[in-house]
Image (cartoon, rainbow, N blue to C red; front, side):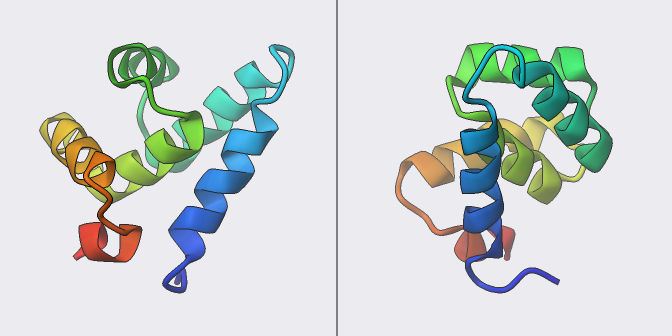
Length: 88
């Protein structure tokens, strides 16, 4: 299990990995496999929410496939809530 800062660390790592356009497809594929969310849906979420992919990975992992929760979780994060708080 992730420690209190695990989600933040993972999000930071994934955000850094999307540094070039050549790396982006690999990051999207990895997030899709890890969360079960399609690559198309992840790209649509990124376009709509304007979040980095590391944040989308954490949000979708917490939402566990519930697309209705994605917006709610993104809203909580944008209000400064910590991942540990959001996971509860």
